[in-house]
Image (cartoon, rainbow, N blue to C red; front, side, top):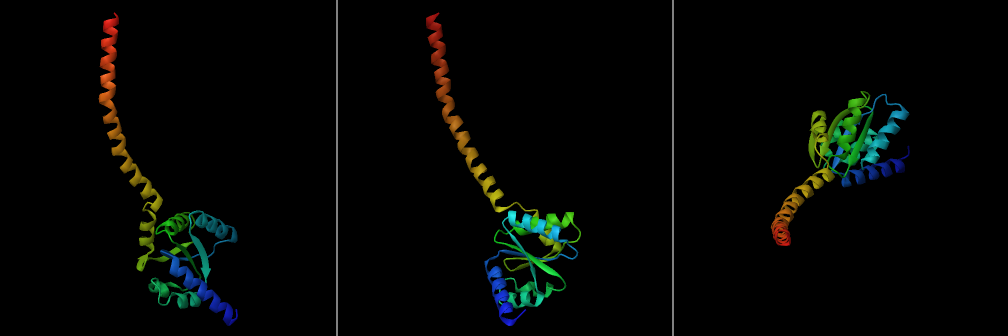
Amino acid sequence: MDRAAKANQVAQLRDIFGKAALVVVTHPSGLTVAEATDLRKKVRAAGARFKVTKNRLARLALKDTKFSGLADRFKGPTAIAYSTDPVAAAKVVAAYAKDNQKLQIVAGCLDGSLLDASGVDSLAKLPSLDELRGRLIGMIQTPAQRLAVLAQAPASQLARVFAAYGKKEAA
């Protein structure tokens, strides 16, 4: 790889680290091409990305970023999973690592906070941002629905009373 290609790759990685909220460092030792392709599809479907990296170039790109604490974790065959959603990459990678022992989670970093492998697993168990939004909307709508039912109840009771009086007079 020539010097210009390396500089280009460092710039791409620096751009990735600048936009990501979460970076998970993994060791994909022994993954077959089919397994790696399957993992990439799952990660992409979750709105994240998975990229095999060269350690030296990744360490250069990490300098002066919020993920600079991960620099010493790039040893051996490494790949990163990254996403702008704080839990998307962690969920997919943790689920895949649970099913496939060839993928090992080394560490992660969430907006500058370093996480070990168990921290990444804990992060993966959290609900996603969309799930939290759905729960919040559900909690907001529930009181409004109850209020509508309570507001409608006196009117329907009054209508039943008038109907009963009407039946009584008709008889």
